[in-house]
Length: 106
Length: 356
Image 1 (cartoon, rainbow over the protein chains, first blue to last red):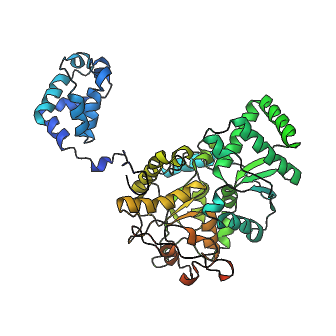
Image 2 (image 1 turned 180 degrees about the vertical axis):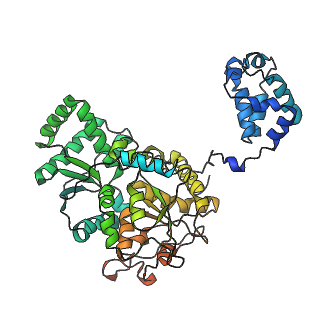
Image 3 (image 1 turned 90 degrees about the horizontal axis):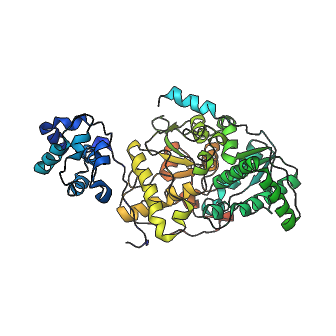
């Protein structure tokens, strides 16, 4: 707080030209399927942890593409690796393997 | 969106703006924030354009701020507005012109509500009669005062002594236009150009020689929002909105901002000082801010009125660099002189943002 009695919250706008995608690029080298996701959200809909923790594989991939790695770290800590997301993916992406590889790359 | 597409949208949203015989109502807050703007509007209408415009000292607030803050119900605001219409009817006018964007939005909303619910209009007529013994006719045309300046922008351009052009380079000035939210976001068909691509200020700037900047947060609110600013605990939210806009427009290096709302120029102007104090960041060139003007002030500048008669010394952000850029002469010694050269005192200058 300062002399004005209120403070400034930084903007949540994301400038895609300035996003650091190094981590996402590393991931796609080992998991090229990450690029095939069409963000349908079937994985998030079926996720057992989602209702209680905010975990969402769709958001994980989106946040990595936007360089928001810290948010991904928080979400993934709730994953139980049950693999239901992999079973429902209409594109047959092995989302469980993607999550494991993200954890290895940290 | 491609330019031709925008032209099409603008052409779909054209409103009828009366030529003459206007009944004018002032804003509650503009006279405190930028006191010369409404005076300049009357001056331009009466003496530059030669129009009949009438104002009545008995009119009051439209109730818009209290209505949007949820402190009065809409029926109360409606009765206040009905009284304003009664004053217009008594004066023999049919074209109602509001100086304030929120008033304009409030009048529009009320007229539309009465159109949809005639029984409510009947109830308000009864309440007005019981409280004031007044009767009213609804205005034939409702306009915002920027609509009138927009309509006569080319006449003003013909009489202009200056244009919005950099006198050194001959390049048009880079101008950000900011439209008040209540102008057309609630009722797009009531504003020139609709809600997404309002043309009212763009048209003025193009006629007066400037170039409009299109930037990502162009349609974002200035941050005023009655419930945000008026509650101190929420004021950081108001500031953050303004900050977001400035961060978005800064890469385009605007020379100036033009607005048509009472709150927007105030907050876009004053918050630049607060951001400079909090973050040490300024958005203009060489440590200055981006000067913010009302459309009447810009009209006054291009018509050659003295900047200090336009009240530009009451702006937080220094306007002198822009005046130099256009080539408008001014006397630095006269800046803080009021009527009859009365000393109105020089304010304490801030440390974070350059001012004179």
